[in-house]
Length: 283
Image (tube, rainbow, N blue to C red; front, top):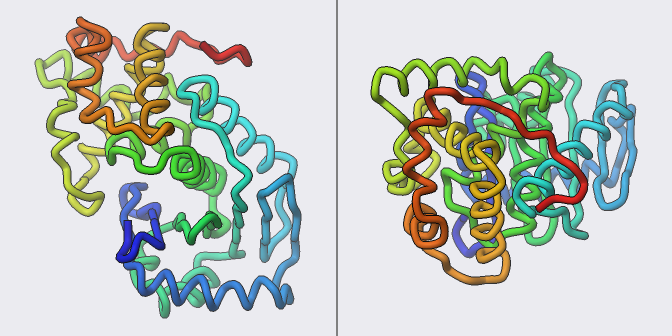
C-alpha cells in the first residue's frame, strides 16, 4: 500500500516473472498522464469493453482469446477461493512492443525497464499495463489475478496475493508441467519443503526472490489441490478478510480450523499433484 492508501501496485519482472511494488508518487503521475492519453484515444488500434473491463491496444490481437483467458481466471478464482470480480472499473492498456512500452513508462516508472507488465490500483479503478510478447497471455492472467484479489479483499497477505497470481497465470492444463513443480518436488524429497511461517514473515515484495515466489505458488497448489478440506479452509480465510475481519496468520488460522491440515503439506509437496477440475458449483 502506498502513502496515503491511494495506490497499490505490482509489476511482473522480466528476469524472474515476479511482482514488485512501484512508488506511489510515480504511479500518481502515470495515472494522471495516461488518463489524458486514453481520452484522446488516438494511438489505439483496438478499443473494446466487456462489462466493467476496458481494453486499449496499440496492435491487433485475438480479443476473443484474451477475454476467454481472463474469464477463465475469474471462474477459477471464484470456484477455488471465493474471490469474485466486483463492479470496479478495470483498464487494460497494451503496447505494441517493449520499446513502445518503455518509451512511455520509463520516464514515469523507471522500474518498468525490468518488467513486462504492471498492475496498479487508483481508488476503485484497477489498471494493467503490458506489451505484446510471447508471454502476454500469461502476464495478463497474472495481473488480472492481482486485480481480482485487491477488488475482493481489503488486504491480502503477501504470500497469498503472489501465490495466487503465480498459480493462475498458467492455464489449468499447463500446471502439471510447470517447471516450478519439479523444483518443489525435488527439494521436498530431499527434506526441504516450502516454509509457510517463513513466507508470513516477509515484509514486502521487494524482499521476495524466486525461491519465495515458488514457495508461495507451492502453498497455493497445496491448498487448492490437496482436497476439499484444504480448499474450504482457504475459502473461509479469504471470506474472513473479505468481511473485514482480521483472522491473523494463515498458519495459525488453519491450525485452529482444520487440525492436521498443515502437517499434510510435506507429503503433498513430494507429489505435487493437480487432481481437481473446477466446476461452477464451487464448494
